[in-house]
Length: 356
Ligand SMILES: Cc1ncc(C[n+]2csc(CCOP(=O)(O)OP(=O)(O)O)c2C)c(N)n1
Ligand SMILES: [Mg+2]
Image (cartoon, rainbow, N blue to C red; front, side, top):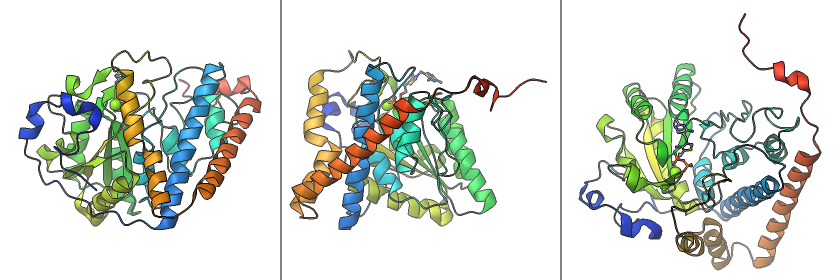
């Protein structure tokens, strides 16, 4: 369900919300229909969200053990966004996102072993160990990264959408970005071109309340981010990004617009990251209480689990079996990542531009 901007303030930021939001009249905001989701789909979402959660927990452990170096940004807490949105994806669609990208890769169908081995910098990784957490791609799965430059993927996603239109392949580019990029000029240049040329791009703003240690309300003059396309006539909606079924339904509505040739659409997913910005974040900009309140009241996996049990889609034992399966997949991925060899030094000279 897409809630209105006033009612949908997540618990952790309600008190901080500037008055200007309430006064701002939302433009052409669209309501998603109440989610009707098949039982099998609910279990599939549960499985995918759990895979991301367990994968990220394992990545955190391997980082702590010194097996993963460099940057590593975990997606824990935000799982419902990518799972609910990609539930509407078709094989011809493409995906591009920021450096907080492990969940997106897994949902796109990339092999957990290859993703984990890239994190550990090994030959079996998607970039043969040279890219690490922020630089992984799979043309086969139409996953175009993994980008460390904040907002850099927005013009690239718009370009991918241009290619979909030019090639008439029927695809939409799912372009994910954080609240931290929303005030950048390149984002608005992209919005303008996308609307001008009616490009098939779905902009998904993952508003997890912070860009590193800066809260949205400290960085943005207006915080209803789904309205940011209004100057260009791009419709938007604000969605409870902690509820996979709301995300699924709102994305379906947005895609009706985009696939119908009407141009881009902006979805602002209200979500939350439980871990620090990256593994080296002391998290002094928010209280432990704030995090534990969201965890206990809004956790996307716990909430879906409750729905599944309440509606008798599956019982405790069936869910335990899924938990076991996921744990085994992640353990195998970690073993693969630890045992895959270091890249051959000759790799230093492949896939790079050399000036003549
Ligand atoms: C152009 C640019 N400026 C600054 C940085 C440093 N930086 C890395 S992540 C980040 C915060 C981005 O926050 P957000 O877009 O909300 O994404 P989140 O980390 O919350 O997923 C910043 C400022 C960068 N990588 N690129
Ligand atoms: Mg953010």
